[in-house]
Image (cartoon, rainbow, N blue to C red; front, side, top):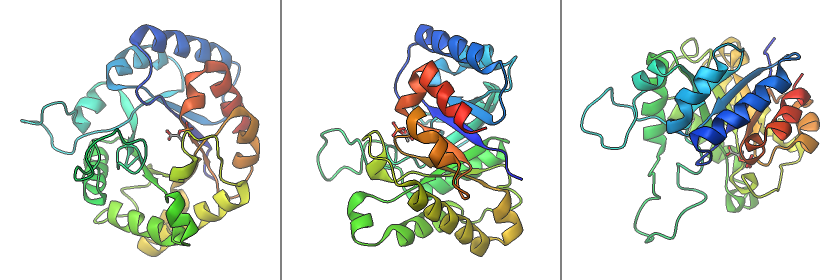
Length: 264
Ligand code: PEP
């Protein structure tokens, strides 16, 4: 039986002092009983302050990105071994913001998005994380025009096959897939719960095709896209949704606590 998992993605928010205040409040709220797994992914600079506060709890520290090389001349990058050294247990890869499919700055069209994430780099990052014992949270999802063009399943299957290329099911047993429809991220537009569950079921069937049913049944598949206290219960009650990847609502301790409580 898969345990539910709720992950907060703070994106580029929170100074270290704000991070500490938010985590302290949240930890007090959940200490009464936490019946699901929880992780918080702060910006790199707040990882150590967050991890110090979470060390004595069951809540895990996550990261929002990683570079695949071990070390070297990669200015501005952070490796999987550096994340492991900082106590990171989970790391997001292939988020639509890093894939450059959403939230682009006003940059010339010929640039490839400011983080230039591709299926290949998602795959390299996933492998680097697994080598260091960090659970990847591999994000997949369609844009609005892909959904309207009835391409949702094709797009996601292609992202999964490329992102997991050369990785076997046993290696990915602690890994996580997050279904994040691009049009639902930060927009307040949530995917209908039965449709979100259908897509998560399709993702599991694709994992079974890539590996086998047993390996596919171990992987947690989360929904992300405008999850809030008000809709979390309905989403998490769906048979194929194992929890949530939460952006904006994870920045407010009370709201994140409501979401975690809905995952019991
Ligand atoms: C996210 O950043 O992964 C996300 C789902 O954001 P939000 O919850 O704000 O839509």
